[in-house]
Image 1 (spheres, rainbow, N blue to C red):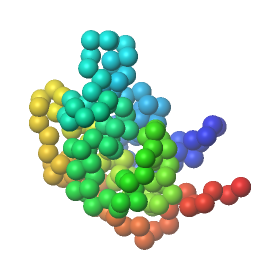
Image 2 (cartoon, rainbow, N blue to C red):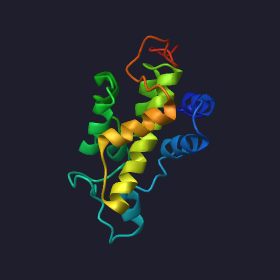
Image 3 (cartoon, one colour):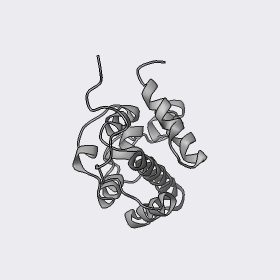
Length: 162
């Protein structure tokens, strides 16, 4: 079970592509190859973010806090409640989002994160990125991107039952 058992139950129930579900599991366990992780095993690798160079590239920094990723998230009309809080781990951030979003919005958000991660890799290996392209891909994959729609019931209650 553990502290994040609801996250794992919900991830496997989402209607997303299998590759995106595997991505969600890998980021939930924080086993993605960020510069910090690679630099820990290979000291000659620079742990700083290759896109902005402003901070060490942890998983939460790469997906949420890097200025180029933040541009994608804000370009996607994300509500400020979803991106303004500071979290140390990605899974904590997604659990907070699950308390605000419905199932379809979570599917769209995780798809956007997957596209954002692919964009990071494209920048690393090919030197190109664009927020509009990332969002366009997420819209195409999810059909009707509606992260900002908070009208439906959230996946988790706002206040956990004791």
